[in-house]
Image (cartoon, rainbow, N blue to C red):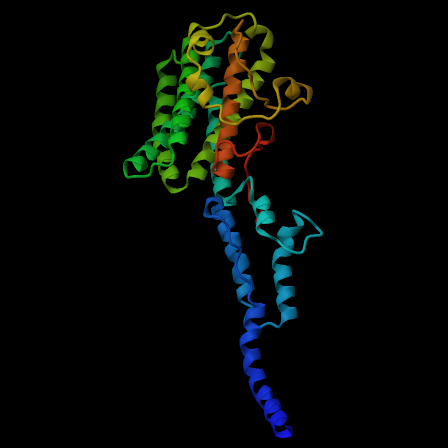
Amino acid sequence: MICHLLSTTVLLSLTTPFASAFVQPMSTTTTLPMVSPSTWTPSSVALRMARGVKTMEHTNTSTDEEMVATTAAATTKKTKEIDDDDDDLGDAALDQVLAGTMDPTVYRLNKFLIDTIYQLICILYPVRSANHPRSYARFYVLETVARVPYFAYLSVLHLRETFGERTKAAQMRTHYAQADNELHHLLIVEELGGNRLFLDRWVAQSAAFVYYWYVVLIYSWNPAAAYHLSELIEDHAYETYDKFLTEYESELKQLPVPDIARKYYEQDNPFLFDLFCTVKSSLSPQEQKQQQVQRSVRSRPFQLTSLYDVFCNIRDDENEHWKTLCNLVQFNDMNAVDANQVQSTQPLKEE
């Protein structure tokens, strides 16, 4: 019996170091978080990879206590943005940090480009009054350029569909409806005299031609970056029309409704119009008014009594485009969040 106990003790003492050698690495290895590919964005992939690399560098060289300290230090900065008391940055928390953001370099480039073009248009085409034909020249140029991205998206999506990608039918229909809506904005400002001069037509059409091919290239490379370009344009358009309505309200209310506007907003089949209004609200129009919701959702039918009502509808159309584009940039979904919760895309904070 004594010999049996001694042999067992010796055997355990010999095998324990080998067992520890295999068990120890398994206890310190931290696996990368698994997330559905449908939620990946360039920023999220980069951040997740960075988290994994920082953890794996210490897998074979740190003790248990060193491993915990290193992992906590690598995630503390992002965790504080969500919950100061949270010690672990999980997938849900990470997605919350990344939602509504995009690569800062792409963001800055897009914003510089669109802001520069917009400022040039404002300098070349100042708004003088509601009755001055040159005021509508600015809107003519803006609408000519603003509608270009939608059929640039369609061009790329149609080509991909030709080669077998059949998953974007809903987006294609929506982009067609958006282009049709912008076309009617253009027809309205043309009826008001916005395209009267050859020089204005040449400037607008030349800019549209160059911008079309630029958007085609960007959309082929990074759809979110291309959608962000239009998000910025539509935001500028909304602010431009809102300012125009505020400054010239009394004048606009004395001017008649253009025939093309009455036909589009009151008489035409609303199918295409309703198709581009993708972002829905859980609040009724009355609740939105009571809560003073900015950029609230509209309700049909429209009653046009003056040119003021026409430009209110044009402004609100731009808002509908902006909400859809924000959802596409941030979530790759046309109706990911409630209409009352949509916010402009922001750059991902750099560490």
